[in-house]
Length: 383
Image (cartoon, rainbow, N blue to C red; front, side):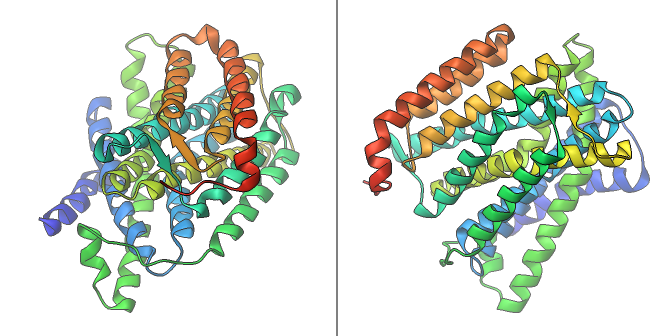
């Protein structure tokens, strides 16, 4: 059974690889199905590789590497939009839409989904993160603090690049220093984990490369197929780029995190999504001005119009509340419910986004005040 699942995951990426190599384009629904299946297959391969990688590096570092590879599709799509914005200002609109949508999906949908699986499977009302994930929460908080400046600056500049990329570098350095622990491998990952060390490491590297390559090769075609299919519904293109494209590119992260949570690795599952949020809220947003400036031929700042400013303010406000929820390395059922409820409300009623931003900020302030004593003493232990 384990071997069959392993083979099935690799088989799922073959049709997409053939279409990419031959340059053949199908109808939008067919492309969405083929490249969506490839992303799913690659996500499972990625999750198995990340589990086995914990035998040689720390869980925090493995989760960080996993999160970085998983957000590569988002990088590819968003950097393309930023690059094109130098020629057509309309693409700056799409770059902000894609980036803010991806970030809000992670926190508003991904985090609560992990908690839901945890609560249903283990009948518990509080999810505890390992202490190693304090690093993610810290750097997410620092990046969020700087991000509040962006709506008022009305642009993304190379100064922002310096700040965000520096934060990402420090974050990567911190997680690389944490100690490793022997993981409990199940399913297809166990087949790889029992192999001799050199062979195991070689296979893990190959799996990382294959999955990352297929995610990069499939995400843009999948997102484009979804957008083309959705245009027939008469939906605002900004909203299509903001939600449909990130759904395609975020699929690997969600699948990996949910699979880990279902197997009992709840801290690693939620930690992977928190790490992905850190990556997107530092390296992704920080590299957009670089792509824009390179195509522009001179140092420049990616402009943000009023709608984009509101989107960034809402995303920053959600991030601040998310940091508050996890400051004590715990997520309760009502914290998860608020994250999902507020996300869903602004998703379906666009004109209340500024009001929702204020609610996020008020709730964040309440949680900071409530938990300040616990924060000073350090996070609670599980139980």
